[in-house]
Structure formats: C-alpha cells, structure tokens
Length: 289
Image 1 (tube, rainbow, N blue to C red):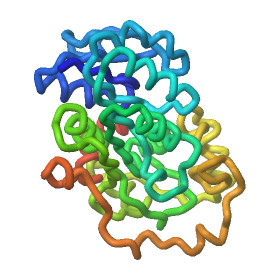
Image 2: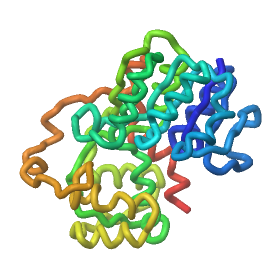
Image 3: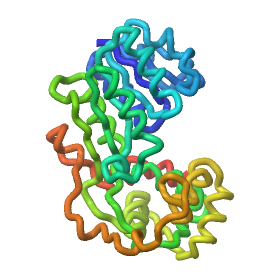
C-alpha cells in the first residue's frame, strides 16, 4: 500500500511516517522544504505546499491513501486531484472543536470536502495537543526553569501526538474505519499547575509556576514568536475559535470537571491512551536544553 502523508514534518506527521514504514508500507512524505535526516531512508520525499495544489501532482500519482493536513482554502481542489489520481481513502487531521461545534471555519470545511468526494474517509479529531505546552512553556523552562501562566487551575485532557498518529495509521491501513470521526483526548483531566509538576518530575528538576495576568501572558507569548505568538489571543481568551470577541458568559459556565471521561485512542487501538506524565518523559530533554 502506498500512502502519502501531508504535513509530514509536523509533530503528528513524523510519527505517522515512522509507523507506516515500520508496518511495511510504501510512504511518501510531503513537506514544504525537503531536509535530510528527517525521515527514514526509504521514504520518498516530495516538496509541495497544500496552499498551492499544483505542487502535489507528482506526489499523488500511484497513491492508495492520503493523510490530509487541513488547509480549508484549497481542500476541495486537493481532494479533486486526489480522486483523479485514483486513490481510494483519505484520513483528515481535524479537530475536537468540530465535535463540540466551535470549529466551523478551519477543519470542518476540509471534512466536508472529503466526505463529498465519494472516497472512503475518516476524520481524526484531537483535542488539546500536549505538544502545545512545549511550544508555550519550553522557552522559559529552558531559560529560567519557570512557567508564567494566568490560569493555574485551568484544566483539560492533553493528548499525546503518538496517540493521534496511532489512530491515523489504523484508519489509513485497516478496514472498518470508513465513515468514522474519532475524537481523541488524553486520559486525565489535568490543571496547568499539575502539568508543570509532571514536566518537572520528568526532568527531575524544580520548575517555578508564576501566576501572571492574561495581558502579561499575552506579551510573553508575543515576544516568544512562533506558535505562542500566533495563538496568544485565542489561548488567553481574547478571541474565540473564529477570531471574534468571545462570549464571556459561556466561558464562565463551562466546567470540564463535570463532563467525565473523554474519548481516547484506546477505543481504536485497544491500548490505554498515553498519559501526560509519559509525554513529559518523552520530551524531557527538549525542555531541558
């Protein structure tokens, strides 16, 4: 089976590529900039950009299945190209915000484009990525062994990127997943303060937790750049999922501790979902230096 992985250099994509290679599949990796040493030697790397669908033409030729990174603006054209190339299955990296109804502009249009194609499809809808904490907290932990955050008691179920990859690989390579949308979370509701404690335990070092105002946190994230700057207003409550001013009454009424256990990768893989403590151990060195 030949499988094209788009977004292959990302946190989820890299894990999907490795798992597919280990399973004996022929893998093509689409990345905007080809670099040596990123993928196993037998992976065929194609330079391409989902915002420019014409760059995918060669990568799609002779492919059986596609892992589709979400780019709403070009999703319909990419799906048309994939269908014309003769592949029969598309698995979408979507979002748990589609399940809850918050996402109508980013991932949902990609899902709809794939569903309308007539091809086999499945959606993988992760909630909060544990990897976000490496992007947000990694720089100050490395520099000062500190996390500055305005919401020590805010909590959710961060999911390990390898659990997301496991479900995607199953949907790409196994029968029985067509027409399913898998919402994925981690197995534990964890506050920000507890997450920092688990990272500290994995590093075997002390990390200070300093409570700051949302405005102060915003300035910190903007100064960091990258994901932190791009996501600051949404993560800190200055805008909603669609970039609009949030409804404060909805946020105040929502209590995640009241919703009970959330769906995890175990429903698909049959294995217990990886904990945040395991994720912290897996990434301890990246926090350390």
